[in-house]
Image (cartoon, rainbow, N blue to C red; front, side, top):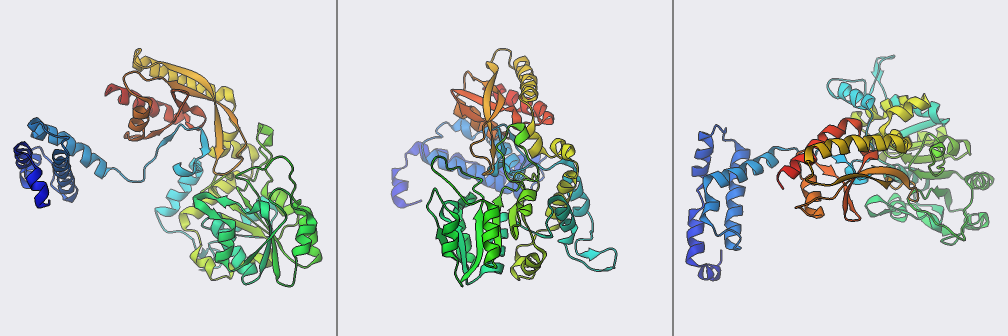
Length: 475
């Protein structure tokens, strides 16, 4: 504290500062209450007392009663509880965004969680071939599944799709030119842009066409002796409408074949099933892209596929072997937990109906509005019973989103439980639910707090209701 600040303090402030308990004194009182005095307890006590000092100096704490042990003990217990809570926590996603990037993207199926627990709780054959008794490859654990499900000749999995794109470009086009349509130079999550990824790979970008229209002749005119690759980027995170056109992948493959060049497609949100029968916008499936003759395709494992975060690379065997031999592959490889989760998810795809029912991302995207409404009514009944008129509750129509940069135009009709709180503002309600022991993330819309039930699992309805009611008990 500066000498000038000391002069400014009144006698009352000085007396309040002197009244702050000493750390050892406070710890002694806690020990009398049965607390084991460990490092976390000491840190929590110091934080509480330091905060009291800041409040006194700021003029926010002027009543000596605020420094009574009973009041400070309550503050300590809250601080200690927060210290002992994990930083990485599960939340209830009531936003209606299915693949929510900030909330962990795709929810893994029970089969994947069980597999992760099995391989994580003991030793495994991560890089050990059980048939030969020799060193094996971790990639072989899922490569066969990917080949059978997509028709690709070979495959490789790295830690995310940006890494997959980087690795492919570094292997196939380092120091040479890659031709891309100007309208496909997208920015993906976290401000990562295709031109930036390409620059890091050592490849040189050659833009062709206009922002809204690119023709086959644009690609053909750009091909030179320096061209290493033709790249197509699926614009899954935005749509351009109006006077637009792009070259179909099959035509690009045919052009590249005439010039002896490979074609790569960055699908972004890779989809193994056609979800258009549920009213969703038609997205090209990985199998359809492979069938078109593309040499290599990359996509995410944790978006429309519904698995853990991963970057999947599929294509012709000769190209995939070159990519596997790149020294960067080791730096970008996935761990045993990702492999376990991915294998479990891929196995569910052998039966389409099983995949739709068991993979949460697919289940949430394909669920009927009637089933969502039934969930909403269950929650509303519990809340109405507990509130006893304290907060009006209703079930309203709303719209969900796919999220994760996939299908940005897709509106998913849904149902939400709407709260119109009394005695507490919408912003305060949002903050209290977000900071609860079981954090609840909803959204404020049209002067209501909405809980979109598309993304709330049946098993979450009871804890969701209990959390909301507990928040209102303190109002």
